[in-house]
Amino acid sequence: MVREWFLVFIGLLTWQQLSAQSTNTNAVERPKLFLNCAGSCYEDFVKTELSLLDFVRDQAQADIQLLIISKDNAGGGKLFTVTFIGQNQFQSLQDTLAFSTKAAETGAIIQQQLMQTLKQGLVRYLARTNLTDQVTIEFKKRAPEEIQVEHDNWHFMVFTPSVSGSFQGESNRTSISLDNSISARRITNRTRSSLYAYYSFDSDKFKVNENEVAVNNSRYGLDARFVKSFTEHWSSGLIYSFYHSVYDNIRASHRVAPALEYNLFPYTENIRRQFRLVYQIGYNPVSFLEETIYDRTEQVILYHRFSVVVDYTQTWGNINTRFNASTFLNDFKRNRLSLDNNLTVRIAEGLSVTLSGSAALINDQISLAKAEGTEGAFLLGGRQLPTNFSYYSQIGVSYTFGSTSNSVVNVRLNQID
Image (cartoon, rainbow, N blue to C red):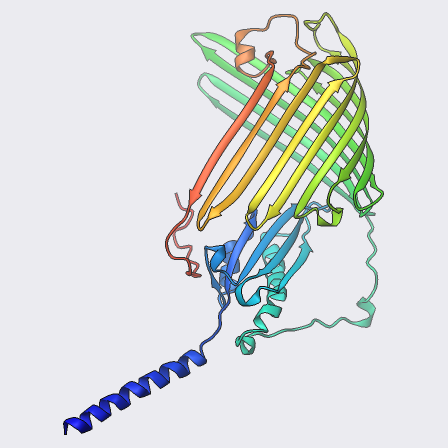
């Protein structure tokens, strides 16, 4: 009797092992995705729509990395570039797809375009799994009369007017701020033309110990640029700008400068990497609202400026750096050096570090007014203070830990104060 029960027990164990092997053989291969966004990429929406697949927080555990980069495009919308980077069993597969949005398109429309692009790029990966029976592909048909070149009635011109204002106050404080601007641009593969005009007004009034302090500050100007590219690396252009500022004691500043630019990388790769060297030489007559500390009411400046712009976006993070060096050609003692930097690095699983900062050495403050201003004007930002340097810095560290394989989206009571 014992022998019979023992044989039955062995039989059950053998059946369970065979069943487990059969189950493993038929297991669904769900590729793991890592979403790497340089900006907003509608993470909750993507996870919800691609629930067929698994999302992980650690890029080292992913089978496919989705690097999504968005940049402003010529039409006032965004150019989205999605890079599919295969890992593990997809090591040899990599692809890049892109789409553009229009300024008037809503977030819902952009989400659908992004999802369409993601699905298109993922097809070649899913074709190598046993999920093919859960994937459908459709091609939209066009009528013969629809197959034609679209005519642009605006000749690639885009206009963006903007008006904003704020009014706030308390018993002993009133503040008014107005900002107006309009921009026009025309961008093609070879040329770029742009015009930007603006007007800003700020008024602050404080009443302290029955004494009233008031400061009004206005500035306005415009910036016009034309640039033409000659090769995948070289471009040249012309810059004109006009500037008026009560804060800077400038009645009118006109700047005309031809410029030459060289991009170390081809312009076709500017979404993911740029290393641009720019040189400009300019003519800048300036008139002042008040006599300056150098006993001048106007001055003609000849200057040149060298700039370096680096923008690099990869799976490990993003770096954006701008360096400027300028000096007056008719007075080499007047010069300025500035450096602006923003660096985001993904150190390890869940750990990211962001470093932002700027610094400048300033030896070109020619517009400082000779007349002494009131203390209130300086404190309220209505008058420029002399300085030979400026700086700004910020550091941020974020760390996320816990489950790395949860693709569930749940927004209940989210963003509620």
